[in-house]
Length: 112
Image (cartoon, rainbow, N blue to C red; front, side, top):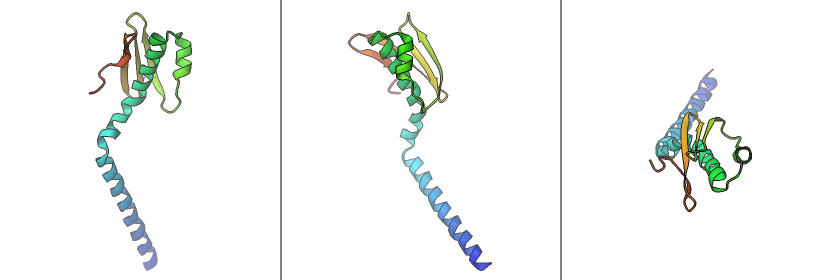
């Protein structure tokens, strides 16, 4: 019985150290980790906008070209008159719009 308690104590201490290290890592990298959820929606919005309005490709071709399978995309909205694309993924919505031939498309609210 004594040996079993000792093993449980060692395992508990090991798990505590691991959880502490994970917490330290998260605290140290919080800025980068908190920015991640908006990346898939922003990436897809910018790429779709560029494909449609800069390259002038048809919408089905762009959707097939841009599609990624790592993060599920919840929705896409296309504003052909306003030359903008809105994408929702991981509970974040990002919009990219066409600026000009020289500058292409930009993500709205980028740099916040």
